[in-house]
Image 1 (tube, rainbow, N blue to C red):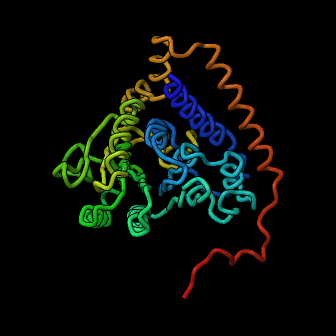
Image 2: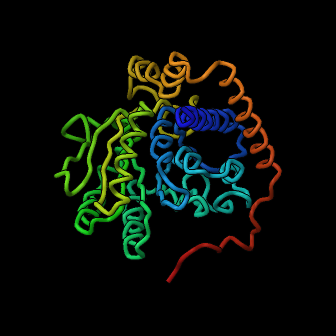
Image 3: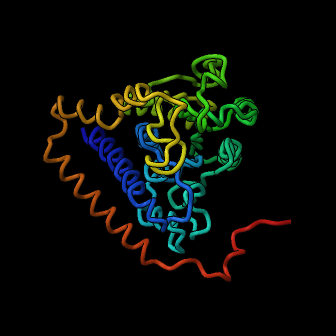
Length: 319
């Protein structure tokens, strides 16, 4: 019962953070591009609810939800969007390059597919050090067009690495629908079950995500090799920026409304209310708690200092 409520709270928290970011984005204080996670919350929440703090995740440019679901600090996230020194990447990374190894978030990447080999490499490190951990790679359908995905999966299967590949198929790579880039209407990769656990699921159903991820994590953590999960979902907002900046014409209003009706947060809330798992006053209490956390995070971010100019060259690698 408590798990069901926790899943809802985590999804609600991510959604409210995204909406608050969107509200303030046009104020021109956030000097970083943003890619909102609205509509995909069930995936990050359902997967990360099965992970330990010490487990690794790597992510993409649409990483706010993954970071919060993994236990990331709200103040550090918002401060990073404002490019402040108190941000999780010290103000050097912005929205697309969140890093917080204290919670196992080993980085998001603005390079399409960039996190896939990194997450695979972390799986190799886990195996070499003989740790009982897993590495989870979150990526979208655009990244599945990259050859590095197939190279990484092949290597992970060959070496039986503890890596879980989570494909968030939100239908679009910027403005290009998946059907214009893939021969089939999905990107599911099946393999012999003894080599890799594979499954295609409804990414808008947090309970299905949670249960599938549980199976994958248990199998992968026990040393049986990698897993691949395709989560069918939808990016309710545009590729980048807030709703008022969305490009139009590449998808119909009917399509967007159809997916909005399948919003993972509202449909899950309805299920919990109908089952008596949660009461309206409890939801109201959750919202107040999250709103207070949000207000504090944004207030601190505005007041916090920018990085010192002399530190501009820190955290860079050169030969």
